[in-house]
Amino acid sequence: MSINRKQITQRMSASVTHNGTVYLCGQVCKDANEGITNQTISMLEKVEDLLEDAGSDKYHLLSATIFIKNMALFEEMNDVWDKWVPQEAPPARACVQAKMARPELLVEISVIAAVIDF
View 1: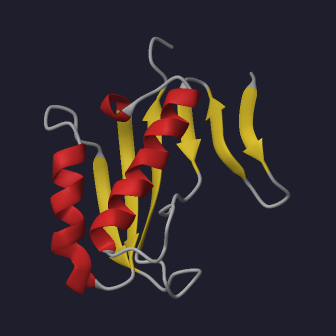
View 2 (view 1 turned 90 degrees about the vertical axis):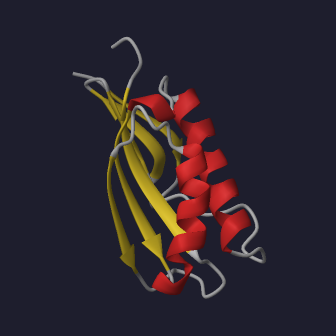
């Protein structure tokens, strides 16, 4: 039984793969000075990169938990999400309003995905 951890820091691993499943730590945008649309776009780009590095992709998402600073931003975030997520393979999803780690952050996501061809 192997566990593969990538981009390890003292506090966390960016991804952990075990038994054909990859778990990503919470992902935020590349530039927190942007609005919700661009924060969501860049956050999802980071998710795609980490999934690819772990041998998966957005078509193999099992679950997504989205944390949003203010539910007034929900529709704008969903506009980006709806264009990004495969319509034929949407994951189970939760979205909750949350206090963010830094005040300029508007959205964060944590996902679980299956490894391709496990």
